[in-house]
Length: 470
Image 1 (tube, helix red, strand yellow):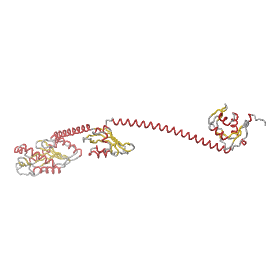
Image 2: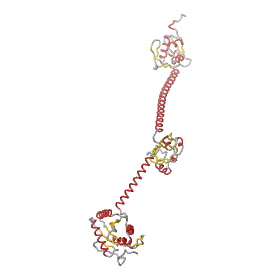
Image 3: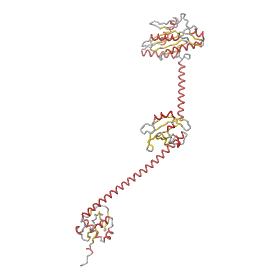
Image 4: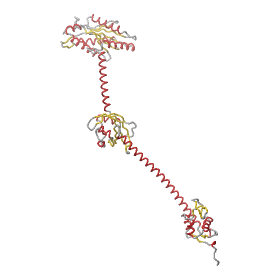
């Protein structure tokens, strides 16, 4: 048998092993050395597999083979114990002995596994990137939180106002300013009830103004209360409280400002205002009241008369004006002295004032003469009133240091009724004339000025001398 030509040498190569080597990324040089084939033989192997549809072109990455650029392909692995002849001349797939269906199924499985693995790697890379971003952001957030906590702690510790946080009424944080305000160190106040430091009389007010620990209250609590210090000293504080979330629990943060000096200044101002008001009222009283009888003085009672005449005309109401005079008052002064006369005049004024309605007016017109104004009073009412105060004066003696002194009263009544305002001087003149008519008629009686006539009461003494000693 003649020797074989080198160009016609054939090699039987395990296709499955060759596919595995190619898939593992073995270089062309290593493939040729491992399977003892030449470059032409390796190229022949690839051609046979392509012609037999045992491999598919899949773009993975580029590789250089035998000085020519080819595409690396995913090889379908051969079924076990299958081989193919590799030579210079190609042969049909059916002579290679490869189980085509098994190799194709196996290749499909490998491609699916490879795709799944690639997808898993991509997903893992995406997850890693997301985790890296989250970790970075968390680190930044933690750094920002630490910076914020340090900043707010510095603000709280160096605040000019007291700051505390309490949960369910128990203090969990107190800054140095608040502790110093009460004469404590911060640690002494922690864990104690917030209400221990609130004056007992203010606790209900504070509780009604704000419910500690409530996160549903939108409006912060704002109030002032008395703060109890360690020494028992009471200090006024202005509190601004608001609900917060402290370490995942509802709590209340209170900002307390010492306003003791301001409150003292306000109290002093209020006291000063009260003193000034009392002084003004006293001056007003002195300016409008008679010093002896405490009735309206002449100026004030005439001013009130003018006001009531305006009202009567505006509201079309009647008005009665009475001029009253103590009978024989000069005799009392001459007999008992002016001090007893003052006592008699004060007592008579008191009896008349106690007989008035709340809106009636009485003033000292001059000497022992009294001017009485009765708004809304008609003729009958004026007569009844005049008789009532006459009896109140003459039926009971006035007790003095010189003994009981009897005194009587004469009255002149003038009526005003109509839409036109009456002249005050004219009304007083009418009442005064009626008074003198009562004096001329025997005193201790009342007379009505003008039509429809007059009315009089019988004198208490036939002699007309009602002021004689008893």
